[in-house]
Amino acid sequence: MSAIATLSTVIIDCADPKALAAFYAKVTGWPVTSGDADSASLGEGPVGLGFQRVEGYKGPAWPDDAKHFHFDFSVPDVAAAVKELVAAGATVPEFQPGGEDWTVLADPEGHLFCISA
Image (tube, rainbow, N blue to C red; front, side):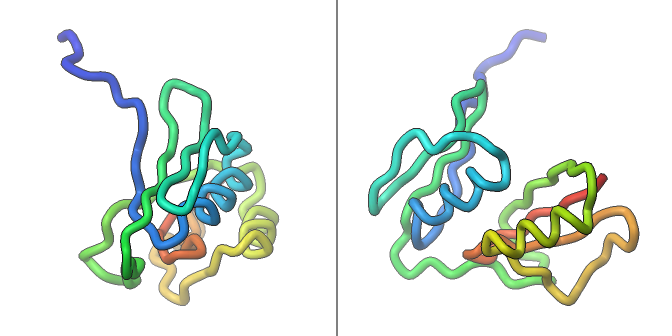
C-alpha cells in the first residue's frame, strides 16, 4: 500500500511554546530549531515536535479519559530517568497504572508521557 501522506510534525497545544520545547529538548536530546512567544519546534529528523500557544490553555487532568495524547519513551534506567526528568520540570502523578512496566509522568504543562526500560 502506498502512503497518501508523510508525518512531518506532531503539534502540541500549550501555554508557553518556548519553555515546553526546551523541556522536550532535554527529554529527547533534539535541538530546538525555532521558537517565539506563539510557537516553537524541535528535532531535525523525519518527524519533529511543534508547540503552539493557545490562550488560556490548561493541561489535561490525570487520571482522566479525556487526555489528548501521550508519548512513550524508552530509557535505560527508569529510576534515574525519573530523577532527571523531575529535575527538568516533570511531575510524577500519584496514579500509576503501569506497576513495574512503566511510569507515568507529566511535563511542565500537564501533558502525560510514559517511560519504560
